[in-house]
Image (cartoon, rainbow, N blue to C red; front, side, top):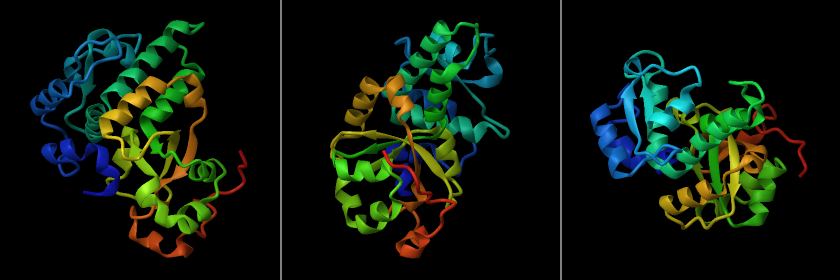
Length: 251
């Protein structure tokens, strides 16, 4: 398994990701029940074929919240995307439920019915492209916030094994990583937790802390620079690419 599949590995292996284009929905629902997965409303979650579910005018997230079902395409261009979304639900059930609830809260607060607004846009960005950067090392977190990539990835390279852990949450990001390329960028939440925590502990901590302020604080992270994620980045010249490893921010 590739390192970015760490939080999803158990279910990815069982469901033959990424070789399979779509999941076995009966097995997927068995995993969701055992996990367990719940919608933002607290109801037990299930995955349903998208052509069997009409999405209401209030939208996809409202459907998940109200009916606790996730429309899932099992064929065509969107099948792999929805498969990745299902893996994210299995890996991070509490965090995904919190995201679902935030979407619905934003819908309820919208001045114009159906209006997206900043909260929904940011929640969508994290849901699609988010990553949890788990570290209790304030120095490393500061390097990320300040775009100091060479110091982060080269000078402090040996610390990645013990002091920092990156977990992919966004399902569009997970889909992109099926065919990785240098410029893939995550929207990172710097989560001040111990790297030794279990996946469930991290999921619970993230779900308990996720709010509008956190979503406003997301920072770009060029994840192909992470040591061990791409063989080419063992050469320090890999990072001499200003289009990918941009500089300039100072927090």
